[in-house]
Image (cartoon, rainbow, N blue to C red; front, side, top):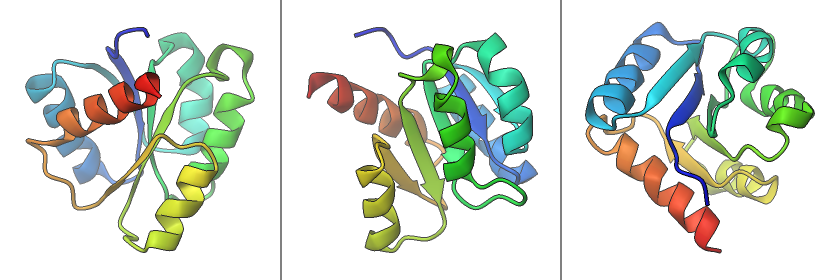
Length: 129
């Protein structure tokens, strides 16, 4: 198992990105690259070479699932685990994402003091299985 150090975070909401950045970099100690759209993520992800993808589900133009599908179609990102963040807390949405291969689903609003630990736990559980 490699260490979780680099996270690509994709979310169209400026406030969410700002809170997540502080949560993941200051509290969690991660190196975070943020994108405000799926298209930006597709343009920038390979150069950043993330260990983990953290994707918002609902975004305009290209949603998180479509973004993820395009990202993992790239050879360099094909094995990069994904965690989704969604304001839709329904079990069916989470189950669909997990069944598609996501390693975790985090419900918004999230606790900024717990986010880094949630990602580490999902990462460790994924590589322990």
